[in-house]
Image (cartoon, rainbow, N blue to C red; front, side, top):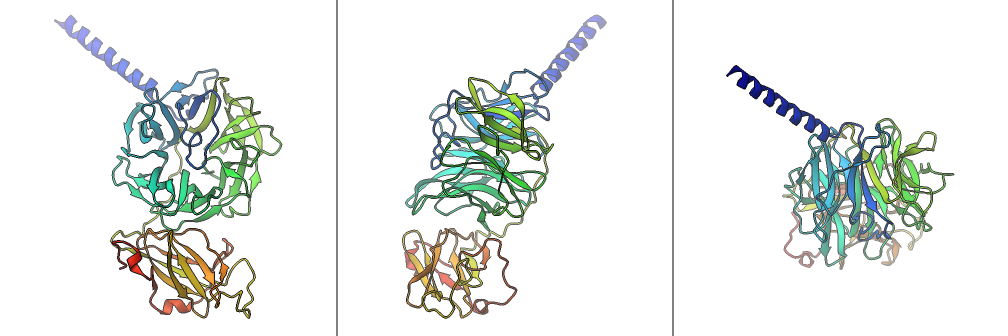
Length: 473
């Protein structure tokens, strides 16, 4: 009887040990590198639809232990036809990514527990979802395909909880939004490209997780393209890949300062033959890069020393595959959690401008043709109203929320002085201010009271019948 009991205990211990060691083997340890891999040659990218750029057909997510020399990477997404765009949670325990189960399936957002490699579906959208990122409060931001009468098709930013609940759209202008990440100040950094009325080059925009306070962060030279996500390093730099007209697939490794993004451009890859596809920071201060020495080769995974502008040895390369976006399984600092001013019970936002004649262009205050005295607020399909500004050039508007608009300035003859400017929108209950029209983005407003704030804000649109089923409160 005792012998039988001993045998049973022995078998239980062996079984538990097997389960324990199996679990340990499944777990991705800290320092593991996960990356997107795709066989064969890359297809021509489409920056408008995201095809072969953000949506990479027949791609897979792999895991590699860089400490094991010569080790083969482990396939993490064997149950998917395509999987890409991995990002690691701040505690280093989870990975979010975009994937489609079968060919022609809708792309959804998925999350993997890196302790046991179990995967769960986050979104169940009827439209494609791509480029997820973790937000400081534990929720997610991602790009989602949308259809409307203006741009016909495009991608807007949405947020949701980790379980996929409470999906909310947070951008409303006629732009595409792709390749988002989160800065340490809590704002989303995203590639935005105007689609209407004409298509423009992609730029980096920043905005709060509720969609408020969107503004330009970085704009490249005419003809350049932003090829990758922008990432903030632990020394206050923003790194990304930027290409020119000569190479639409890969490009140069660029760094800009967080504090002066428009005036601190540095090409870290100067003098390095070849091109780069993607980059991400390591906690050590080094970078992970996807690089090839010529267009006859496939992209491989390398370490890069940004301080000395030096490409290191290859971490992993395979002549049959391209290694694309790579991130390390590491704990990293959780960004600041920003409070939200959005109140969905409010149907409007407020916009205050200090002086419409404060621009980068010189204005002759004595000229009736160069000095602006009015603004016209332009919607997608029609004018939302023309408003006289105050003597000091200021205006104060209450505008219907989540409606895209642009502003142009007019002289006393009704002729255009400036504009129309970039597309704007206000979230419900948002309050925004600007110094002038087409002013320097680093300009600080004067500390003075504007005449327009001494009056009630002017409601826009002026003719509410043009907006169906909505009222201004």
